Picture 1 (cartoon, rainbow, N blue to C red):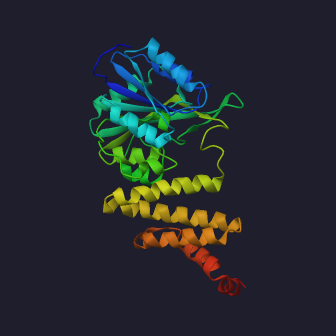
Picture 2: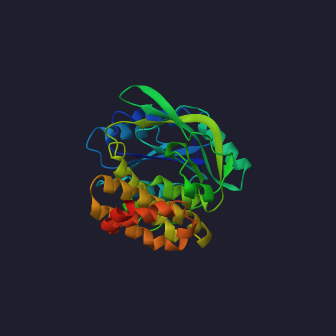
Picture 3: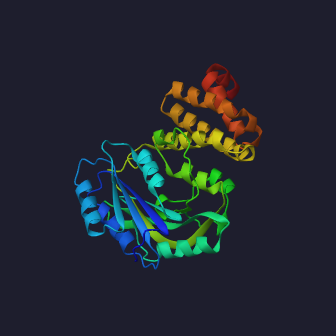
Length: 314
């Protein structure tokens, strides 16, 4: 690893209360076998544990590589990340959350080589392992199965197959839509913003681990809560898409409305079910493109007109 004032890659690490994990994350970056300069920007989000002290120790040991970006108050993951993206000087940007880590020392080298050889691509990602902290073992990979070597934003609108700890962007996005920092999930909207400007390259190699643990923000959520959080990211990005891309995302949003309404009804939460079914009407222009429209209309009948539904069911 070499030092230089103009980095090839800006590695952006966001961290909050990761005292047990942050060293492994940073060490996995420092272990990269590369012949180009990088910078490591660590956004420490006002942790209540020893995370900040650990980050500052690394900055002191590697002052020409690591720069700690210290929040004075807890900003939240997305606002923390936006701050790092604004500071990034590299030709490419690589993301890593403070509780995940890379397991290949060739990761940065392989992704930079790919993007250098494929100027049509603005995003590069790869397979990762799920690491279960409580069991100290890996369980499964993501994505599974592998997507094609080259995909587009149209594919990404249907399904998120890009793990955050695997992604590398070409540093070309200069503005993040207002409201992004309020989202509970931040990776997929960023992937879409960069993928709108080029293709997505996929490397079929397992080069990172996503850590599943009870103290993470997302893992403890119920299936319904996770689905709602994902839905909000899709709805947020809808206005920022071209019309041809809205025709792809609209049916996806409709299906999220259906799934959330169905789960809400199972929980006897009629008000929530009605709310999401009603929100789906905002995407009525894409209703004919939605394969689940019969089930959607049937659920509408069951939720809004239960007596009629009961008579017809008999």
